[in-house]
Amino acid sequence: MAERTLRGARLGGQSFEDERGIEFAARQQVGYRCQQNHEFEITMSVEADIPAVWECPRCGSEALSIAGIQREEKVEKPARTHWDMLLERRSETELEEILTERLELLRGGEIGPAHLHRASKR
Ligand SMILES: [Zn+2]
Image (cartoon, rainbow, N blue to C red; front, side, top):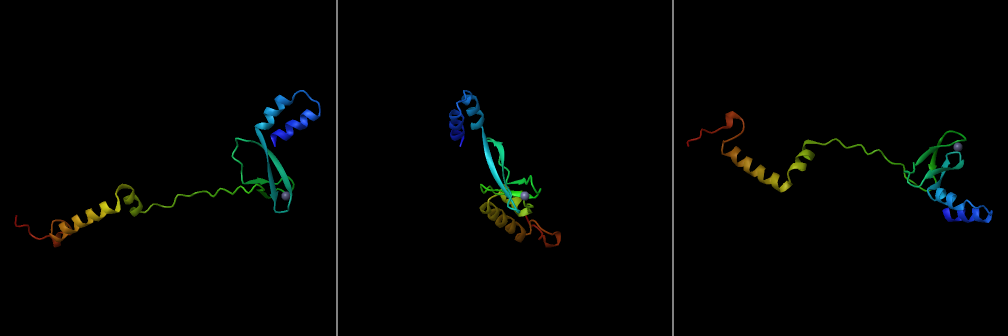
């Protein structure tokens, strides 16, 4: 696209194509189409993040990118459960081990509700 523009400038016999070429190379036309089928292009830097929607200059409604750029869904962090937090710190294997260990202690009356404690004869 940039090259074509540059050639066009040369055909016109202008001598500033180098400068313009650089400028065009750094920009791009992004097409949009609104619900009313109005199409328009927005000039953007090639480095810009292309927005998926742009306000239609004719009717003001939301126009979607023709290039098929997907609307970025706002990634809302799902609420972390206690289980999620636990898994960030321990693997399930580890948890399995801890559970077994704790169950043994519980069954042995070492831990747990006081009324379940067995008198330790040690
Ligand atoms: Zn429109």
